[in-house]
Length: 191
Image 1 (spheres, rainbow, N blue to C red):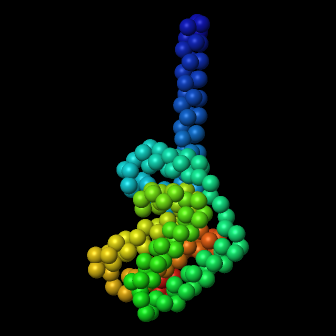
Image 2: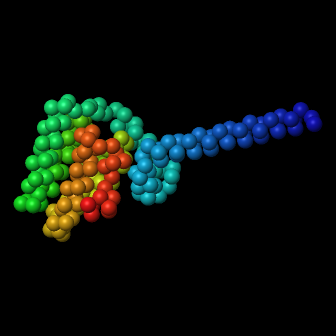
Image 3: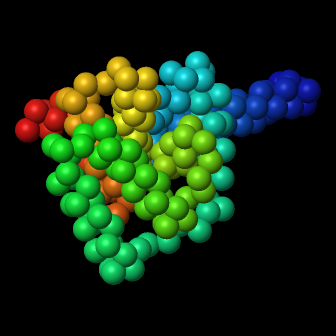
């Protein structure tokens, strides 16, 4: 083999190694995002239509939330929020529509107290998805029911489900449950 052939083969090998390295890096990044975001990863894929755009959005969320100063609550605050939720929940039978509104307000107050910015709903949900991906679907489901209720289209059972969804997010943000425990499944709703 002459020097030119050896050089071409060497360049091809180096390029092949570089491409393989890049593909492996991309695969690892995809796995990391999928593991971190859980069900929210699939939601982003569905919403953005391609893996590249979905993953770019998820990385953008991570970067944005990384700048927030999310703080844990003091034990007295945890107690206050817990008591507020118990009072709210206890009045559901008498005022389901009012309780739903109060539940949404209490969740927003808790988010604000923890340090989440209070942008529009979609931005709040995206921000929550970074550290609480297992319960952000609960938040979206509760918000849909709240919107339906504002149009006069939700029945009492839907209002109950919305409060249960808000409770899952509330507990997660309060630190009472892990994200995995807080996911509301049809079996948990029936209980």
